[in-house]
Length: 286
Ligand code: NDP
Image 1 (tube, rainbow, N blue to C red):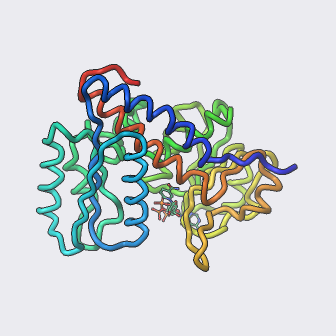
Image 2: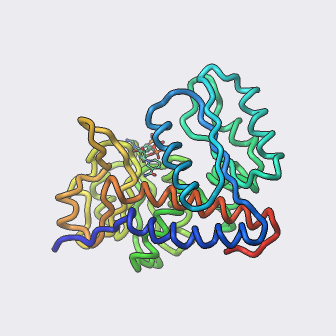
């Protein structure tokens, strides 16, 4: 049986409509939601992502400003910019596009963001809140995955979830969010023994590895919900970490690449920006 396609692009478009209304309501209440995006260096993929974030913000009625800095920027200058943005009452959200060029310590820079403006959810404070089940600004890709599952009617409660990848950006936080929704979670990584066998246990399988088409049909349990986070460029085309066509033969639901998790990530960034704007203005959450 062919899998249901979890169309992140269409779901993100629905969320955008809600966010547009929320941004308009905020403006009527006298608050102009604002996102500042900081990009250092000339990584082409990062420039594409930042462009897409800024354009989406504009479409939704969220003001944004991108700070594009040369790769030669010193860490102390970058930290000062982040501190200035953190102190600026007109700025509700701050995003530092990763990766930073070599020589700049991403962790040290992110920790200069005011946690109330940490719309990427990656400050140590935000990570702690997430682990405690108290995140108000959850990291965007994991939050997008949970929203995709929710809208597809997939309840993680009691299910076997396997997450391949243990990065701070995706693997660990999505594992926490699944745990909070009462899944039984296994986190896999490069030292996991017999990865296909572990993955075949999964009723919900999240692939966040960064290796093109690594998870073949052999990794997929019949009827599994498969979430492919991977974005890999192969021969000029974007492909995921899952070998899509054969996996779709076994899965009950699957995300495509592109058009699955990616658009949800941006939608969650916008949602976090509005959440931060409400909190900072002392208004109830939309
Ligand atoms: P990282 O490189 O930080 O982490 C990759 C993880 O995969 C690591 O934990 C690593 O294990 C594990 N891994 C690598 N090789 C293997 C293997 N052979 N077997 C098992 N595990 C393995 O990547 P990210 O988490 O940042 O990103 C993962 C993918 O998701 C990338 O393709 C990235 O581009 C994409 N991405 C997509 C987003 C979106 O919006 N759709 C957003 C963010 C990322 P170990 O820890 O042992 O090294």
